[in-house]
Image (cartoon, rainbow over all chains, first blue to last red; front, side, top):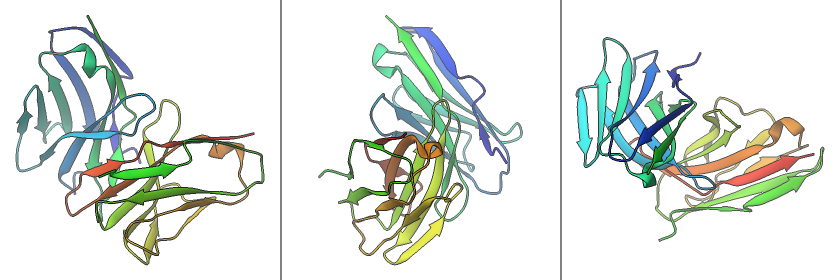
Length: 111
Length: 111
């Protein structure tokens, strides 16, 4: 049961433009979603989260949007910077403080 | 404040050997987790713990064992290593929120 799916394995954007990373989910019994960022040879680091009582959460250049009717989550990065090049994972709460992760999207920001 | 530390960083095992992956956190978080990440895949939960003395299986527990005798330590034991256990292993710790803090990972190859 694939609860979280990231359909795009990779995304390439120009520096200064917007990056949009997408995530679809099933089983909406639980209501907390997160985005993590991972550089090569490092562990994932928490980026931003959203509760299902909201449809948007913003933190600096990063904004997460939640469309509950479509069961869709997206992360917007504006403006994109070369240092944002990393793998981005979306994750959703399952139960007992557990998370289910998507497969990840490799973002490359070109100078 | 080191956060979550993992040892070793790299290890090569022969089929049938055993080893313990160490994980220590200094954040005093109750929840700890072990994940594996295979190429092109998301993070799969192996085992988790909600506190000292309490552990439970995740999504892919076969071939692994854990213990949690202290809040700080959560070792992962591989018995009878198999090539299918070649992966990158991440330990994480978390508190009452759903944010999890990851260690740098252990890259394991079984040949």
